[in-house]
Each structure stands twice: as structure tokens, then as C-alpha cells.
Length: 391
Image 1 (cartoon, helix red, strand yellow):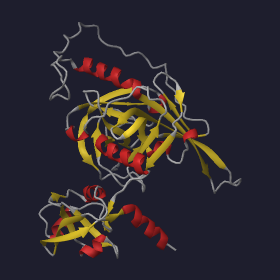
Image 2: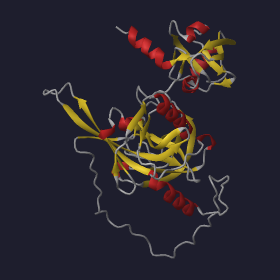
Image 3: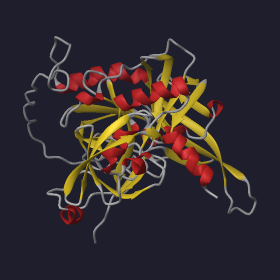
Image 4: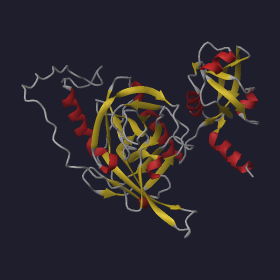
């Protein structure tokens, strides 16, 4: 029987009382034959991510892991958020307390005043500052003074009132390449200050299902061991810089399977600045419904030589897409000269444009290319109009 994995967000959720785990101490000892130990492996010098580093001293892999862990661990926090949910099916019609636990990282972002905690929206969603507890690396418990959330990217920012808190530096996620070493920090199963290691397994992963609210998906994939409770924890390169925020895993069991996803830190920076400055994130909007994937059979039927671009299933009336002349069954191949890989790539790209911006589209229609011009609208305003028209 073919089994399919599911993609799971990593917050550890429990009802009224929290999650309790047990570990057995009665496992039988592992018996090994008595023999001379093999000679230690020869460790090649490692600098940076295997390419370069600002450090002039080379370190073996284990030494570099230790240095990075010591540098980042003081800025890693555990988060608990209490929220109330209403159970309409309960005979008493009473609300019940739900506790969500996750992780976060203390940092500073250029353009954002003070110290903040970066975490996932699904860890703190619908919780007020007084319902959120942040446990620091030294076990102190503090509360944020303000909370900003962006459900569409699953990013949340917590403002802290202590400017002396330790912080982790942010790196450049665009420089990360497949094969680069990374460390993942967090509180899986409530085990605070856990560190695991792995590599970047893939970039620009977006065709994964994470629920209806998460629309902006452009993940770094890693095989570092990440489990429930790790949500919001940092993914760090070997220069000791945060390059991602751990968010989800693909798993059949609900635990680590070696396929985990992190939000690139460059996306986090853009979202964080807008959240703090404006309280929300401005995103561009075209007004099309896209196919979940471009299947090879679709590509051949439309006359394409490979499955590429974003296939339009429907165009909504009175939208930028309709005004530009886009039609159902069109395939968007390029935007302003940039080739579109798939539907998720198109969504992410359009979201970066500002309302009123003109863009050039190259589309595939009737087995040949056409060029159109569209004027991007504001996503938030479009959603408000849509909700106003729903009976």
C-alpha cells in the first residue's frame, strides 16, 4: 500500500495541562565485541559553510558546531501561549484553555527598534501579550510588550522591553546553497536548548500544504532533526548567523523524518519591518485562481515542452488580471523577464510588488507566447472587497 507523508506545523499543542513526555531508562545495554577502536577520522578544516569565513582559524566540524552553539544558544527561547477556544459541540457550551508551545530567537533587525523575538504565527496566534510566556536561556520568564503576526507567511514578532537581552545575528538566506551545513535550535517535546545538525537539502520549496492561512511559501528544506515544539526556532549557518525559522516537517508519524522546512530569514526581515512599521504586510494581487500544479499531461496538452510556469484555472472579474486580458488556461511563463517555475513562485513574486506597479507578463496561449501588461492591486484591499460582497 502506498503511504503518503503529511506536512505538519511544529507547535506542540495540548489542552489544559500541557504536554507530558516520558523516556524509558530500562532499555537493555547494547553489546559490542571487544576490539581495538578504529583510528580517528582525519578532519578537514571547515570554514564558514565550506566556502569561506571571516575567521582566520580553521576548525574541525565538531569544534565549529560547538562554537556556533555557544554563540546562539543564549538567544534561543521557549514560548508558551495560552488561548481560549469555544467548543460549540460541548453540551456546556464553555470555552476551554489551549496551550501552544514553541520556540523563538532573540534578535535585532535593521529598521526595527529594540530587541524582538522571531517565532511562528501558529505558536502565538490569537494570544495577547499577557497570555504569552517567553522562557530565556537562563530560565528567566518574561512577557512580550507587543505582538505582531502575519498568518500568510506564518511569521510572528514579539517586542521585548529589555534592550540588554542577548541576541543572535541574522544572515543572508539567499547565499545558502544545497549541501551547506546548518544547526537547528529549539524546544522539541519541551526539551529546551536542543541543538541538531544537518544540511540544506533543497531551496525554494513551496508546493506543500500547510493549511488555508499560510499562502506565502518559499522554504529552505533541511534534514536537521526537527520535531513538534521546534516551531519558531532558528536555523543557523556555520558562521553563527540565523538563516531560517523552523516551521514544519513532512512526516508519516508526526515526528522527525529528515524532511523539515524553514522560512528564509530574508523573507522574515521584510515581513518584520512592515509589521512593526505599519501593523500589517502589503502584498500585490492579480486576481487569478491557479492550478495546484502543472502536471506533465497538462503541459503536453497545451503544447509546452516541459511542465513550467503557472496554469490559470480562473480569472476573477474586475481585477488586475481581468483588466490585463488574462484568460483561463493561460500559462504565466515570465514576469518582468523572470521565468516562473510554478504557481507558488508566481504567488510569492506578485506578493512582493506594490499596488499600482506595472508588470510585463509573458503567457502561453493557443500554443504560442503572448505579452500582456498588468497593474498590480493591493491584496488586503481586494480581500476586504471580497468579504464585503459575500452574502
